[in-house]
Length: 67
Image (cartoon, rainbow, N blue to C red):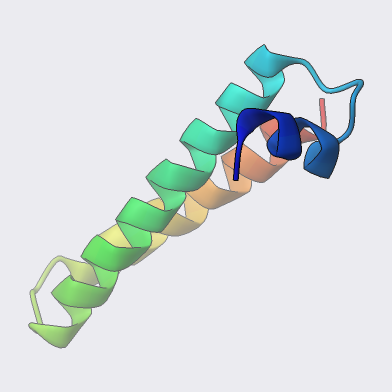
């Protein structure tokens, strides 16, 4: 997808800074989700802390995107 197509997918009135902020938050949440999944599969003792961190980061990303 080219940047021009991406602009039309999210709307013409959405600034580049806002799109970048949302993208970074989504990437952080997705990365944490994969790490938490691997930790749970490996039965790591701190996997539950990673899951909670994932939930908090995802929630904060959602709250920030509504501002």
